[in-house]
Image 1 (cartoon, rainbow, N blue to C red):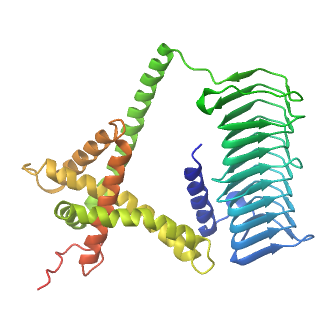
Image 2 (spheres, one colour):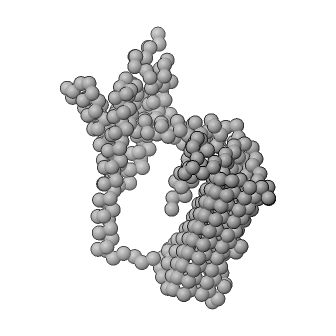
Length: 399
């Protein structure tokens, strides 16, 4: 599991939901954005509820789905649908009729009945207490994991320290450094584990495992070779798909803003180091500032707008770098006009995507291209007297 990726995905989903104007599937939609949200015991919200606040406490009833983004979330009431929660701290002791999705920065606790599946992602601590009853599967990724509830499906746990108790009707899959099986634990299926250092999992007395206990099997050399071939083919196919998508997006960018594309590419070529420094600063600092703004009441709209701009800059940055690389490769080409722009874009994108396929260089290639391209766009915008996207005239040279 990729915890950070899931966290950002859930954050963008929640932000998009709060910014949306139309309810889903015709359901009644209730939205709240403010300092504190409190739904007291005995109160009922009919339909879906989407809320963003510093603290959110729900002791009442929400008849449909709940999407909440808050610094601290406390839910002791009943949610009639699914729960999507993005928070720093979360405590879920109420009843969730559907699936439960928790993504947080610190402690995430589930201590009530859940009618569907449970997904918990956090860098610190995640716990499903003995008071919890999960009708579906449980998937948890955290540094410290405690699962002592009743799980009627399978359990998938990945962490540094994992403690397992209670009852699990299905299989238990573990990836961890240290695992503790509490006395009285009952596992209806198999236990499939992978411990650091290739250590064996010791099942103490008082722990009942109705299936097999086995370490994750190592593939035979032939199987590993076949898997590598299949993985390489899949990677090439996916890169070809992304290349085609990037070309389609790039065509729009280059043909709609030809002067802006050429100016940004020229800045990229003439001030590469400066572009990289500016781009890296934005690439690293912008997510921190956006994430902080989204959890402040005053800065939530600003953070949402900044997140959209940041995503657009990520895409444009790659296109600008590709266009600049293409200009270097085709500097002696005799083509002019639209044909030259299209060939320049395709050549640059193909070169970058091919370079990203080199083992151990993919992340570095994309970081370099994205940061330098973003830096070129920002420097070009800073130097220009008019809006970069709409500018078709030459920028005025200061005297």
